[in-house]
Structures are given as C-alpha cells and as structure tokens.
Image 1 (cartoon, rainbow, N blue to C red):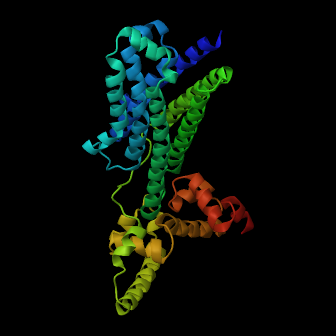
Image 2: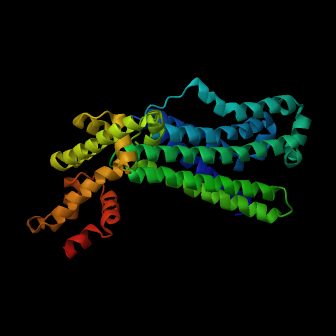
Length: 382
C-alpha cells in the first residue's frame, strides 16, 4: 500500500468515526441539546475538511466550485468548537444573531472566491487549482485560518478559566473529571491545529518528503483524537453541569462598594466580622456542607445574607473560594470520623459520601491538600 492509499484509508476512518459520533450525539437523550448540536456541527465540518484526503481527483476536477467551497467551510470549524465550549460551560447560552460574527471569515473567503474563482471558466479554474500553492488568494486563506487558530485558542481557554473561577466561587463538588476532559480535548485539538500551521509552512519549502510524512502523522493523530472523542462521549453523554454566565466574580463586585467614607468602612468592618462569626457558627452547628450539591445561593438563603454579600465575604474577606471554604469543613468532619475508633469499620468511600463529597478523586485531592496525607495514611497515623 502506497502513502496516498494509506492516507485515504485513515481519512475514510476519521470521517466515518466523526459521522458515527455525530449520529450518536443527535440521538442521545440529554438536556443540553444545543451543546450536542454544536459539537455535531463541528464534527460534520471536520468530516467535510477531512474528506479532501480521499476524494477522487477526477470528481474534484468535475466539481471545482464544490472543492473551493469545501476549502471555505474550514473557516467554520473553530467557531463551532468555540460556541460548543461556551454552551457546555454555561446553561444560559443561546445562539443569537450576534454569533453570526463568527461566520465573517467564511463570508469573506466566499466573497473573494466569488470575485476571483467561482465564475471563471473551467480551464482557468483548473489552472488555479493546479497552482493553488502559488496563488495570493490561497496565501490569504491560509493566513486567515492561522489567525483563527491563535484567536480561538485564546478564546476557548479564557472561557474555561472563567467557568472554573465562577464555579469555585459559587458551587461545590463540580464534576471535575468532565471539566478535565473538556480542558484536555481543547489542549489536544489546539496542539493539532498549531502543528497544522507548522505543516503548512513545509508546503512552501523544497522538503517534499517531509511534507508527505507530515500529512501522514497529522492524519494519524486526527484519527486517534476522533476515536478518543467517541470513547469519551459514550462515557459522558450529557457532558457536565453548566452554570449561569451572569454570575459575577467577587473581584467584579467589590469595586462597586469602594466609594465609602472612613467611618462607614469602620462600621462595615464590624458588620463583616459579625457575619464571618455567624457563618462559621452556622457551618459548625448546622453542617450544611454535608449536602453534596450545596451552592452559595442555597447557603445564602439559609443564613439570610444576600448572595452578593456572601460571595464577597468568603472570596474576598476570608480569602477563600466557596469551593475550598466548604470542602475545608468536609475534610475536618472526615478527619474526626477517621480518628474515631468507634467508626473504624467505615470505609474511606463511605466516609467521603457521609461528609458531602461525591467523588473519590476530589476527596483524596482535597484531603491531601489540607493534611498532606491520604485519608488512609491519616487514619493509620491516628
């Protein structure tokens, strides 16, 4: 089997797996349908792009406008992935007219192709196709895709950073395994896209053999990543719990409250001290942290402190994320159980559920962060 045939086989496999996953996401039952549909859009666009590897050359020459449009569709791949990330992170996300802005590169490319390519005669189109690597339109096309990779990589990781910060300040027990998966696929995808930029530089050099093998490696990696998507989607069909993007971080609330006189600030400090004392007493006596899905809104309702004030109180004045604040009480409770000889028959798994955790990995990470020991080591040392 020659290299072209090998590339064609891998291309077929990648497209097939992408379409299989797209079908699965369209049919699986989930509350987050918009996220699944956006990922389906990403997979379909990826399949269209990847189909160029195995499409018969004769078919391409008979349908050159279709091939040029296939090139242009590449400009929609990263926008679809970016919107997918947002839709998974934030439950209040809805596709709106303003999101058409992400289609501007696609529109520009097609406008250029309309003016310069689509309406040429067949001979001129074939001339352009055969010498595309030398054409300024193709240079511009490659440059625009490269800029997209840089901008959307920044955008995706900014969204994930914002999601994590808001979650830590407002929720406990996030489904960290799925967040890590989303972070991991973003890393893997953008590593592949940056490698594709490097590969495209080789196109314009005299290293033809290196160009061929770069295509082989990239296609193999694309197939591996696509198969990985399928395995993960089967394990996590609903992805993870989103949050409200309108929630504010404590640092964004504080500036609104800084226009006070010195006397008012002194009075306010007394109020803050009293609120902290009330909060700690409530946490110790009522143990609301035992509820695994406790949120800052629920705690706010229980102690009758406005959620904005409670967020500033914990995240700013106590210098802790809500996530760490609650888990500290859970760990202290777990420590007391682990030291209690009357509860030595309880397993670590039973204890973590009893104190409000819902994940063994999250419990072990938090416990070691707080005590520098694993739960088992702490029990043995007690």
